[in-house]
Length: 238
Image (cartoon, rainbow, N blue to C red):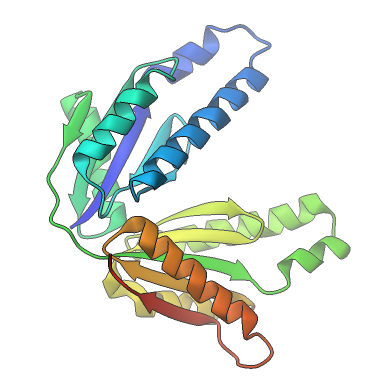
């Protein structure tokens, strides 16, 4: 079962409303600092953070020891202006696991809820678009941002239907986590969108899956013009 954590900053909206009206720069700075801190610590224990709304963040925890996660969250709590709640859930897909984890936060009202998950392989899919950066020479930087946002929405909907979770990484890069049984469906998505390519990494360790995906994408990029490759899978376990 895929292992996913959902982290909630309890009472975050109420806190933002308590710090006055000249607050947005404060909120954005605190969000950025908290995300930076959490991403660094979760990555060190081989997980990955998807910030989503920032008051809710999803943790990809396949191959990560629960005790290590709890140590990170305990230290993270001291940085947060509000209490931290965490639920770890298991599912056949990343999307299902985060639904289970979210529901447990809502229904059980627990501060820390942990479900033991049977280890399995996780798939990281790193997408990008050929020559997307060159659009800045034709359009404005904001117009190119709108174009990549359109792609993000399209991909997010398709990935969700496959039971996956996706996140915009910046530039023209989009990341998705899916279960191993939909890899062929990912290839079909790439084939249906002109200029799109994807490096896919598979591992029993989240960070290793990301590394494998980046390596696969790099090979695709280096071979552009030599071979018509828009898709590659690299699989290895720790």
